[in-house]
Amino acid sequence: MAKRATTSTAAKAPARAPRGRAGDQPPPERVRPVHHEGPVLFGQDAAASTLVAAMRSGHMHHAWILSGPAGVGKCTAAIECARLLLDPEATDDDVAAFRAPRESRVAELIDVSAHPDLHVIAKERAEESSIREVRERKQTNIPLDLLRELMLGGTVSDGKNFESPVWKGAYLGHHKVFVVDEADLLDQYGQNALLKTLEEPPPGTYIFLVTTQEERLLPTIRSRCQRAVFRALDAESMARWYDRHAVPMDERAWLSAFSEGSPGMAQLAHAQGLRAWSEELMPRFDGLDTGRFDAALADRLGELVGEFAEKVVKENPKASKESANRLGTRCALLIIASRLRTQMTAAAQRGDAALLAIAAHRVGLLARLESEIRANVNMKHAFANLVAQWTAGSAA
Image (cartoon, rainbow, N blue to C red):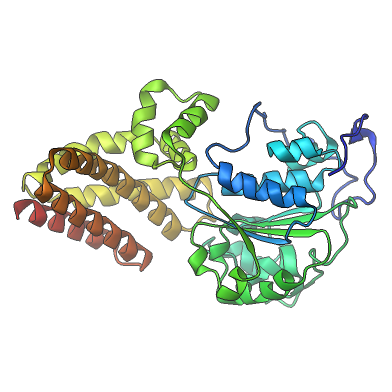
């Protein structure tokens, strides 16, 4: 890494202006985010150490898989790597601290999504695609045409031909970084198309595949990448995250039980008011535990998930209703699972083997329901079966 420059690079013109932009100035309507002091990541010392050691070695591998639970900092880490790799003002001390400069010209461009050598590929990028078919489809995966447009180049389904951003030189003359968020949403065609680039990319090009389901990536993809593994945050790390984001003290215990060490899920629950779901649903599950069948509970679960999905789609009309339903279902299951964890802890402390067995059975019911939703089983039917099986287990 270069030594920190003594004068700001903000006044320096880039070697070449980004294609499709007027000079290197970010659009005036974009507002830079507020940056907090202190660490970028919470509770991910092992993953951060792996990435730091690679960058400081001078021989950083060109392709990485960042894997782990949803919402624990994988994409944040990928973008921080990009900041460090792209910024000539970043020092070795910055790399060691895993925190890039925030006042440099490179930082300003990244903050407003205007850096020409940082390419983030995600399913949501379909909305701004120049390919009509890609723009009009629901955002359920990362289609091959979008991957060609934003990264690989080549001819797409409507006959357009794109030059490859991977094989172009760096606009600002330093490095290029590609971040593929939710890389497990690449289908087999997209993953196969990516193989050649992963095998032998041009010098100074770094690729980060961010995923919660590494097993869905082809073995040939995995064999070409180094790994940084992310974990759920411990209680101390979550407390530091709450402090950073000024989460009210009276919300923290419930959010911790719900999120299972995922700041992203805690943020989602806080923003969507999911504690109200818990306050409504938990008394009804108390009733199920006594063997009383609640005929309306399955319908109510479906309504809550449906309302959640409608809100997601209203905020982003191109969002997939199917994906939104899956996320809403996962939120409902996390609420129920947090209750089960409490029950299992209490049963273990009392040595109540019978209650532990019942709780373990119910954990299996939740896992089966989530699998059914992924397999497109009717959501109302899946919830009805859950309620029926839950009650039957209580009666037994």
